[in-house]
Amino acid sequence: AQSVAQPEDQVNVAEGNPLTVKCTYSVSGNPYLFWYVQYPNRGLQFLLKYITGDNLVKGSYGFEAEFNKSQTSFHLKKPSALVSDSALYFCAVSHDNYGQNFVFGPGTRLSVLP
Amino acid sequence: EPEVTQTPSHQVTQMGQEVILRCVPISNHLYFYWYRQILGQKVEFLVSFYNNEISEKSEIFDDQFSVERPDGSNFTLKIRSTKLEDSAMYFCASSAEDGSSYNEQFFGPGTRLTVL
Image 1 (cartoon, rainbow over the protein chains, first blue to last red):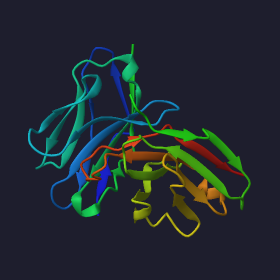
Image 2 (cartoon, chains in turn yellow, cyan):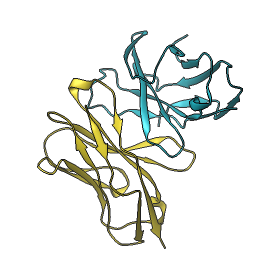
Image 3 (cartoon, rainbow over the protein chains, first blue to last red):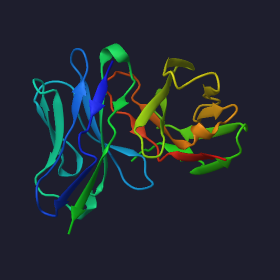
Image 4 (cartoon, rainbow over the protein chains, first blue to last red):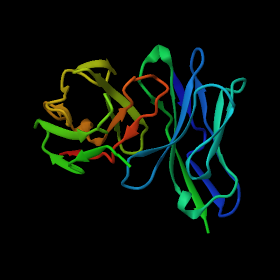
């Protein structure tokens, strides 16, 4: 079975500093990995995904994520955080053997302090 | 930019009543999904739907739940007899027509269901 862990419930970072939101996964074979962001009273918005190829993927709003197969991780990063980045971030995994069923992590609340 | 829409934004119902949650997926998408998020918990897959039938469902999706595409635009989730534990945010999502596992799913804003 697939599973996703986000080891930090909350991440605080000062505006202008780099941010990292961590994600590790467990799946047999090669995963497809996704990051979504949820703003208050809004649905989940797609940020980026890893399918294959270059381990560093770039997405919306200046975010990027690095796939590390040996560490089974897919950490979300941004070089310079903005206050408007404050939101709930979800990592998700899918796999050909499990169809279209996305398995989400528990979410990490990011607070960017001015 | 096309988006998934959901109505109502908030539904309050009495235990034992039937509710129907509505979604309008992105128009050229053919794969549709329902997820739920109980307050403070993670987003959980309920069901996927393609070509007018369920393609996958989780163990949460028991006989009390059903889905339907009654016309060319709407996708509905029905809960026949609501329980207190059905209180959650329900998200509809859709994805591109080939339904591959690597296609991102586009989510609606959710319907908050409160069962009293």
